[in-house]
Image 1: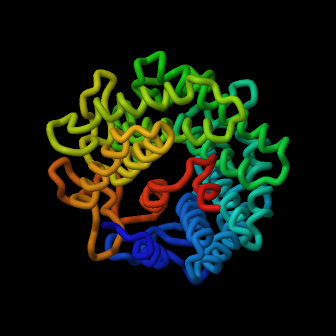
Image 2: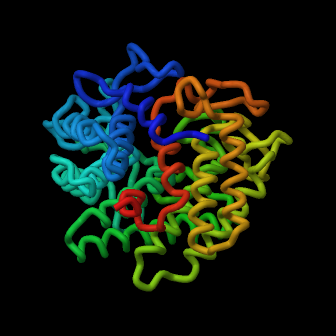
Length: 388
């Protein structure tokens, strides 16, 4: 079985001496010549923050290393504020800023020097630049100087915005701020899950125009895009289901639909997704008639399926969900686990060979580490809070 300590040993190889973390190749070395990417740095900082909360030796230093890179390194825009997408990309995206907010929240919960300051800066930017209070959702992408806002709106960034704001609420000592952040998360989940997904028989739209009208044909010509694929993304349906349960756990009077919708979204993702093309596993994407579009098996999709099943088992006490979590985890151990690295291959073909149509290498440890940590702990607003 995949061991968390060995996974973290592998992840530590992403540390760059000049600051931050790099993209890991299949052999566990940083891919040369690849620009440093903020989402990688932030997610690795978050993972090492979780390791710090577990008391892992050396984890505190790695969190400080990541926090310093995010606060003062080249990815941080000292002139205009916020974070570039990468060292070769000056755009300012909600997806990236959500992960910086998550990293700051986890570092703050782990009581790492610089963590609270990173949390404060990232939260201010999220509220000022990305959160659209009228829509109850976050906008997507700005230029470097915050003067031009893209017309595109996306569910993926909002999903991670929910994750990050729940973590920030857990990290703050201000009860009023925590309530406001959880209310924002509830508004986003209500719009995406209780609204668009439920109204479309649990086929969750991912892409929208500036008025939040769904764009069902978006990226039809680039269906395997790593962040904005065409169609229904099975793994995101599992993630939204799980996040609805994390949100439910921290609300004083959670609406009944949070659990009901989480169950329905999970069940349809499991039923329509598993072996949709006749091969075991979950395809990356389906079309609007539940037919596979990109049949590649992504490790993160299976990780999120296992995590969602485990959280549902904890919330409902139903053995069926625990059994699904075990079955899917065993499938991952047989198919995805890489004994050479201690991590999982990030992409496989439908028949189990290592693939690279969307992902090359084994870039980070975020999905797998969280899957390993969510199996036997209480459900809280954030993974960090469950460890505390």
